Length: 116
Image (cartoon, rainbow, N blue to C red; front, side):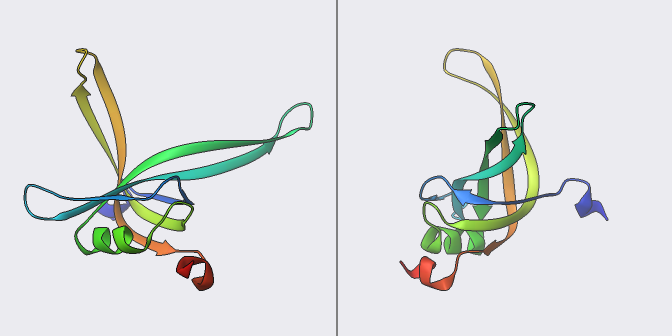
């Protein structure tokens, strides 16, 4: 039950091609931005779509597969956990970034679309 305490599941599309690097510990790391959309009707009855962007990071074999096959526009289901990072930027301002550490994912594109 501990894994449920910090768990997030998203379905969305990659905003650009993923970036794959090797960490100091010689592990593969792939990061990508995932867009999710929410639609609703405002008080005037107009249909509004809001897009949220999520920074996702995968390690090891999952990172290698994502780096090889995921592309801008790919539709993915991602399951992972939230990680909050505090840092000081170059101007001395303290910042907070939120990453989703990917534990599992599924490609949701049709096979013919993935090949293209």
